[in-house]
Image (cartoon, rainbow, N blue to C red; front, side, top):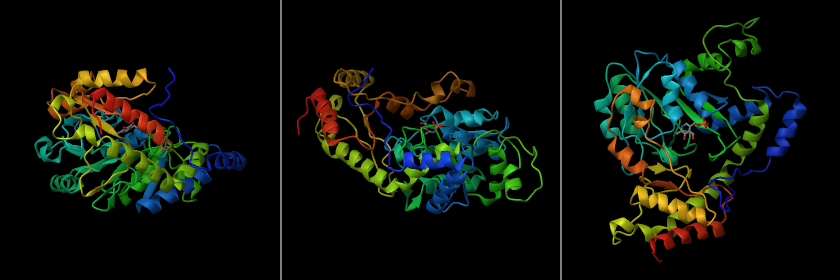
Length: 384
Ligand SMILES: Cc1ncc(COP(=O)(O)O)c(C=O)c1O
């Protein structure tokens, strides 16, 4: 079905076609060509990271992280239940036990106040997800991790260029993962990156990404032939994708400015729905951005009064050609998640059943946003 206002639309930053033509002319369409190198350099400079490696997806960056940490059946990994499947699946693939944590009611991020009780002798890592581009409470998470000798791997899929207390997300953990999937701020269709903040992990990360071979050492002239030295897989994207991605990364300021405008429009114009004097069954909750966080403007969501209300609003918007979507189905209640044992995550269960994401993309016009906002206000019979 065609929507007049889709939920997402991939938007160009400017130089995508030019760079792809250059990549084809370069004669290297496979991975680690000149455009991949330029993306690496740009991200390493921006994030001040010892190494950034483009990957075929954020999912694959997380899989690399699980291999780098030598995760296995003796290990437990703490992950919010309210996240995308890949955050957990990457570690489950190595046989690790997933321990699901509940989220904070305000930001929907990992609830740091409940983490301590989940840590055991077997805990190897905590994987905070900076949901919707709003940073987790990294001081508390990193402090607890340090005290217990546990690693932090950040799932930064939503949150490139967000800051917690002025420090960029993705730079707190020993490793972090990025997504450049078409729904994210910076895109190349399908793509991702592993940010390696621990210099001791750099060499092995390059080996894992190159099918477990020391091929990159060979290209650097450090060995005279390359061979199989570790486990790994084919995690590097084509230079054609890196060409597209470089254009996006170079346009990051313009992209972030546009997304900020979209976010702020919703925020300003939806305030009347969040007034405290409204009856609970009519009151909508808007996103909460803590004072110490600079968000990445990844998405705009509403917390609606009930599941029934959400379903009715989705249908109402759909009737008018507007696609709104919900996520995530709590992982601790999924068929696979339940194999790790029963868990209680009441905040996740409640909020995931009431959350609705509104159309959000760089080139979304104010006219289209005005229509979305007007329909939502009409649905609740709320006027300015
Ligand atoms: C929090 C989170 N982590 C990981 C992923 C996986 O990203 P990718 O599609 O790049 O593998 C997603 C995808 O939306 C996500 O939302």
